[in-house]
Image 1 (cartoon, rainbow, N blue to C red):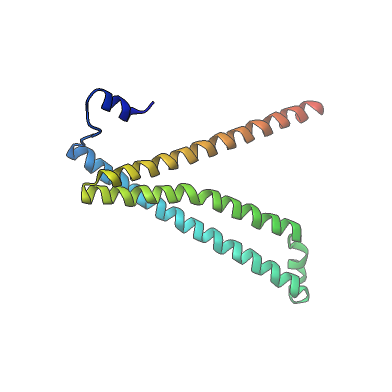
Image 2: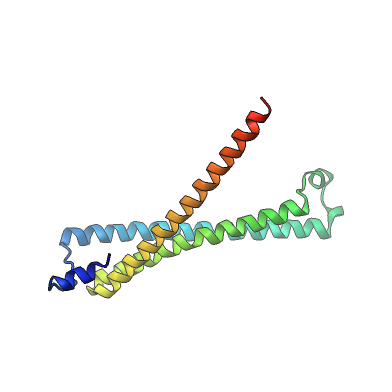
Length: 162
């Protein structure tokens, strides 16, 4: 349903007025969104650094296995396991990046909207918040589906051996 069409059909303009209280709460929300966005970017950076560390450790083991202590050689993961670990970690970081980016955009655009009293910036901020929740919602549905699938598989295989 397009609410703008309803407003225009009723002869009204498309305006929403916010009280000072609502603007203060929106500003507080913006600050928390920025906090979590920055925290998310920090975690993404740490994840990337750990992946780089895993990659260098694998390279060091691949090119200089005789330099590694015997105990470490036997405990080293296989090449396939290491590669899969890096690939899965990169996928998780890439998926985690988008909600964090949308949260950051919401915060920046809300600040601009409040400071400049700009309806266009406010519209973009709400769009970023909408994108954030759509992404997280779809991701939640995907993971719930995967969980239900694996629970079903576990129940099926669990009853086979009873």
